[in-house]
Image (cartoon, rainbow, N blue to C red; front, side):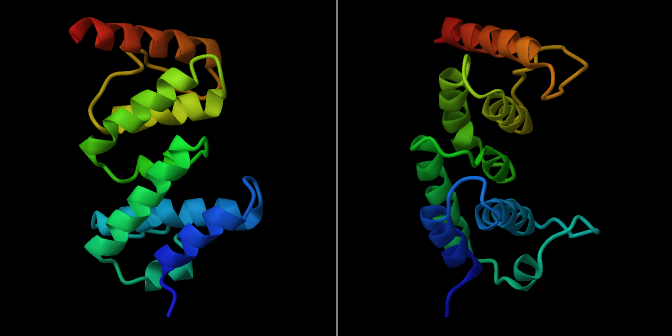
Length: 152
């Protein structure tokens, strides 16, 4: 029997980015990670599939690995990965941040959010952390990466 994780991975391999099935798979992945971390649904709109899914360490690791590979191939699954709360993903978020400095503002923003969720400060001391602040996000990301490079 196909698990939710099997379904998500298969959908990401077959559906085109932006198609409803693709978007639903990424959202289910994010909510699966939240459940795996012990969060409660609290009316957040988890699908019936997520609510019914059996959460296992093996499936959680498989899903994380598949999403990392998807991101490294240019896919946009950072929102889902940011729900893992896994410090080992810091390098993935930094890679995307570097790659998107002058690229997709949405992916840049999601990489910054992923880093912030891990306790990093890619937004520096800014109060506003909006996806709409594109140029300010790019400046903050450049400064964060410059500071990071200086520490190496």
